[in-house]
Length: 111
Image (tube, rainbow, N blue to C red; front, top):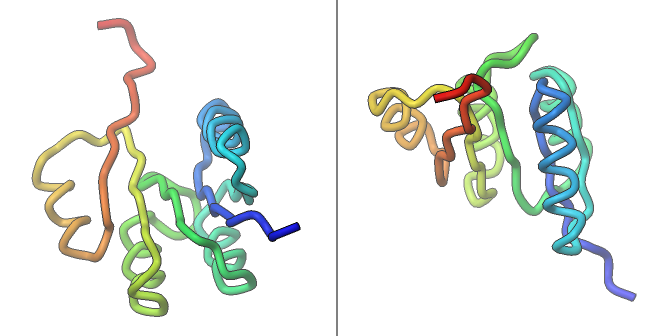
């Protein structure tokens, strides 16, 4: 049996962790969840994930810095930013830092 591709999720919101875990495991991926930037960096360096799903507002190491570090060490690794920050300038900056895509989290507040 072939090993499942592993996705590294670096997200401090427990609710989003559960959503992303369920989403990816239902699609057949293995999932590693880290709740802060340093744990995420350690997990990235200790394994060979197929992709990283990264929040921006993390304790420890900010998502922007983590994205830059990950891409400098593995430029071919897809990094998808998932964040509540919806400012266009932030999205452009992250894409310039090497993020492969940017998904805005749904607002926790009613609209």
